[in-house]
Picture 1 (cartoon, protein in one colour):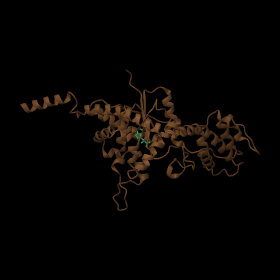
Picture 2: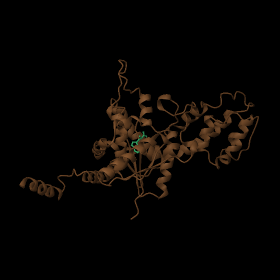
Picture 3: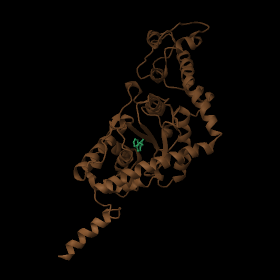
Picture 4: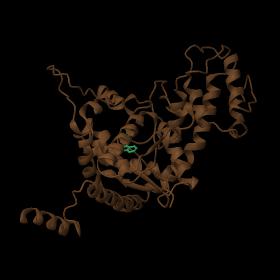
Length: 383
Ligand code: TRP
């Protein structure tokens, strides 16, 4: 039998998901799900990982589990095809982590660039000075190891994630190789699957800052209503040098165009042609290149482009919002999806854990093994 193709990926439930998540991962997940190329797909709500830097706020994590689940369902993840589950309810993952801990050095963890950057962001450091109140939570420091457990527990062959997760997948691969060569080849080495469109690797915030983040208040959420989207688009950062409509404008670094790159489809030019019809000037565009060329040349105002972007975004967001409204009215169904998905995921993780323990020969009480152990040890002491 050919090796099964298995996907595992997930998100920390620390907030509602936004269009950056959509472009960077959710859209791709739905495509992968519907491609029929995968034998199993596991999508994990990583609440235990979220707790590694929210230990004092489990309520935030608890509330956001349902938000993320609603976002998943509303973008089109289908529980019949994708197994949605909650990380913390699979205790096998913590057991795997405990054994993998022995295969990783503190120095190796310290070199993980994503963990380094996240520690700096959160003010976690090992500076012994008196004003260092934070320190580094051990759980946070070690979360790459727990992430290796997430991935290997489900025998994932493919992990679709953003580029910031690359060091995690690399570390997982190292753990797999170390485990397999030290004990027995039972773990599967995963491949990372990065977003394919370079401009989509990371969508900037509406203020033009490099990252959409809740704390910066520069996100457009999948669950925003259309009026909120309209206002956020209206207030978006463009080209600060584009003061008069007649001035030439810059497209590079102009957030409105970055979003258009990510969301605009060929059919939008006909569908929303009226956005470019004004009282003073009108344009007829057939491609984004034509819009950009006009903007660069001057004469095309931000308002027109923003109106167009609003329509383009709504074209994607409207169906998501409608599906969300339906699921919000059926919360018992959402929890049932998570409960069933978690049960199914747990069965798989439990088989992996059994294989891991067998490989490490720490399966003392397994049927057959105990008899053998008794025989071996009795013989030793019978001498
Ligand atoms: N670290 C990921 C994030 O912050 C979430 C995550 C946890 C994950 N475990 C995973 C992603 C396993 C992929 C595979 O978004």
